[in-house]
Amino acid sequence: MGLRIRGDQGRYEMTLKIAGRVVGGLHQRPEYNIPLDTPELALEKLPAEVWPQGELPAALAQNVQPLFSTDFERERWVVKEGDSEIEIALDRGEVKAGENQEPICELELELLSGTTQDILTLARRLLDTGVLRQGSLSKAARGYHLAQGNEERPLTALTILRVAPKASVEQGLEAALESALAHWLYHDELLNRGNAKAKAEILHAIARVRHALVLFGGIVPRKATTLLRERLSEAEAALAEAETAQAALFSVATVRAKLTLTDLLINRGWRPFLNAAGEQKIAGSFKRFADIQLSRAAAELKNAFRQPSADGYVDQLPRLTREIDTVQLLSGAYIDAAAPWLENWQETRRAIAHNDSSVIEYFRRQALAAEPFWLHSGKR
Image 1 (cartoon, helix red, strand yellow):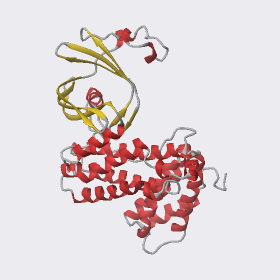
Image 2 (cartoon, one colour):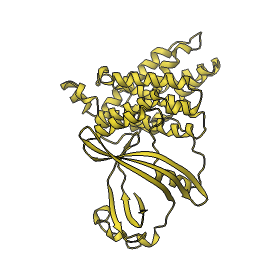
Image 3 (cartoon, one colour):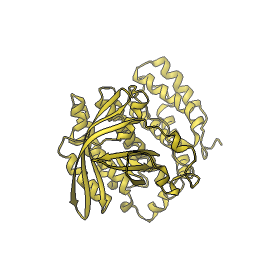
Image 4 (cartoon, one colour):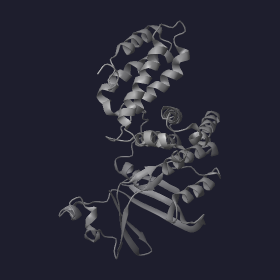
């Protein structure tokens, strides 16, 4: 939950925002807005349904303290896009928490009426100007970070994907793509703040999107993702050519790729391309799908690395990277068992990249000898 009081020329409003879904900076979540006479909390005015026990906890109002404040000027325009009415808001100012502060300069789009597709269409036209990019950090997220000391945000690595128990194959696909997009947007922010190493993680995120499309390619036809794959190639080229962080972040190619992925996720753009068999498969158990695909990934790795290689397996590095990604996307139901199994292959990859033949052989043998950790493997 996030709670705020907003003031504008003597008018005040209390807003409670509840966790929802955020995909590529597009927020879909419930919120409750309560008019106030003064900038003082009035939690009792919120509907009972927002509280876990159906009523306001007795001591809550006395214990709530402000963590940060935002002070900004907003310019608003209401525009028509297709059959929809959309508010464009330009906010400029700053967010503060104690002695820490950060500037605000952002353009927000809010759907007042109509369809999500129209807001994506408008976003696409705005991004094509080359002076905007998708952002994932809300004012609140920045405020919380400032309140916690404003330490430098760390680089993160893509890891094993956690998927909800009893998820469908479609939910597994969505989780894979959403996690890659979130990784991309997070490292966009780091690159924008001066961490040049973040570009490598952005490229890892793009690679994971590609690997996910291959993994689910037996169900989702290639023609469903043709545009996305083209956009990803253009983004990779733009990132390779960019000499500055700003050139990388505001390149039309990179912002188009992110919005195309966002569009695919929000609208589940693969559905119109599914035949009856595909619809049945994508509604099936992700766990069962994962077990089958894990066996296939392991077989691919064994075929590629069964025999010692005089050239140090350099030609197998792309395949190894893809299969490690595949296993990470599939093994969320077995996190504890999957981690050591993956570690041997990850160390093999590092050794190949550094051309350390003695270490390659050690981890190659360890990886090949490791027992499968998943069901339907012939070993469990």
